[in-house]
Amino acid sequence: MLKRRSFHYSFFPGMASLCALMVFAAAASAQTPATSVPALDAANKAPSTLPSQLQDFGAYVDSARKTFDVPGIAVAIVKDGKVVMEQGFGLREIGKSETVDANTLFAIASNTKAFTAAALQQLAEQGKLKMDDRVIDHLPWFRMSDPYVTHEMRIRDLLAHRSGLSLGAGDLLYWPPTSYTTKEVVEHLRDVPIKNGFRSGYAYDNILFAVATLVIEQASGQSYADYVRTHLFQPVGMDESLIDKTYLKPGMDVATGHAKANFKNLEPVPPMAWLNDPGAGGIYASVHDLAKWMNVQLAGGALPGPGKDGKPARLFSEDSQEQMWSMLTPITIIKPPIPELAPLTPHFFGYGESWFLSDYRNQRLVWHTGGWPGMVSRITLVPELHLGVVVLTNQESGAAFNAVTYRVLDAYLNPSQKTDWVAVYDKAVKKAESKADDSFATHEKARDKNRKPSLSLANYAGTYRDPWYGDVVISSEGGKLRLRFSKTAQLIGTLSPWQHDAFTVRWDDRTLNADAFISFSLDMDGHIREARMEPISPLTDFSFDFQDLRLTPILKAEPE
Image 1 (spheres, rainbow, N blue to C red):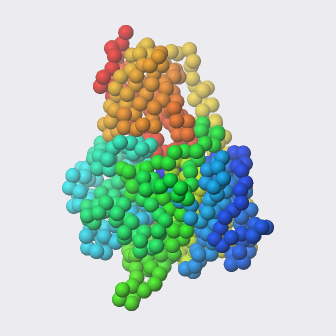
Image 2: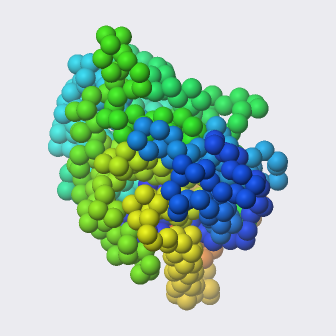
Image 3: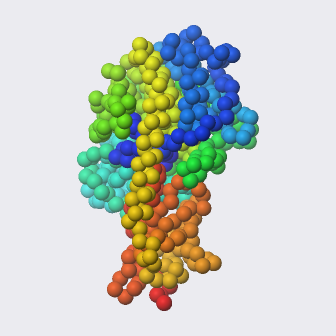
């Protein structure tokens, strides 16, 4: 998704080698009073239990909201098993009066992945599976596009982004929402191309978490939603958390996501239900509930209070947590885009079972991010300090959650220095945006506006089929070409000639920020042989994996 949505944000914005981080600077959003547990006083000072660096934390978060145009942010900090702060800032939705508080629900997107890993480890402890079982031992019909990878894919591999799939491969099967079922999504994996070596390197994916979802259901005999609710939410005490948007009821304390239509104007985004890959990113939660989740993680899986036998109750064993927090896939460390971000450069970086692993100021970090239509988030744990911080936002600004997170980490790890991470990330965002502008300028410079399409517009109409996605339909309507992804209601747009047999696709939903090029190749007789697509902007979320489509005409008009 994120990414801007779906899913993983890197340390630095605009680093396409890890993910497409969607962060934009904009005009100030409306300032609203913060609500908190514990509450801030009239001077916006934090309680005395907070480190001195965080005594002006309310003003700092509001600065991040203003700089990155984020209507609402919620933050929780835990330390040594205690909740130091749970607090909301700003609005649930622009143009409305309801404010964000500690109990406001946000889509946590890929922070869901840690729950999926915990569920699998629980089932392993119960003897219902082994983490190194082959996937085909539990789902005999499972197929990847390579027979060797099919045979050797282990349950642990599903959580580690090392399958050989490319970045975001197959995301269009469920992002934006499609009508495929979870099983249909997984069945389509047999046609999703593998572009890298199996276990040879890191490339973030979501589709293998759909496989993990089905493994949980097969091994437990429960739906994913029921399993997570009864075996994770209830023991931890996450009474407010929900599996997906379909469980939201009118009047609930829930944030509305916001996105920049055309990368410019902030607009509310309708809530999305992710029913066909819930294990990758379906959960809605509050910082109040996620503070409990962080404390259980920092306690090595121990739950508060005694168990039935008088011994400490556990969500999972220490051994299971050690497996989840052990590096499986190293990730290349990249140079920061601006010098001011250099202090964030880790000495090590990798991925375990649904957690990123790195370091900051000589402390190990265990963390993840999430991206959703209009919402992005970050959970960060510092195990040796028993410290955790979660930042939930209702705008697609990774810069905001990073700036807030590192202010909290510095308060505990580097109290003698007070870096204005808002200013640093603002500078990085502006640089990323300027590069995106340069990219489009390069396309414009290479364009020959005098080179018209080879065929009449009507002759590009027809049904085109990709082996893994399915059908994409181009129709001639009122002298214009309209493109529709057959299983994705939001992907409807208009084609406009660009040059030669290339067109731009401008989607009706302008909050997608995913306009694309589509180019047609013709054979020697003037028949369309194939169509290929790619995003126009480098800021487009990597889940729009148009570049992997190979669209072959199956029904089309003959050339005139």
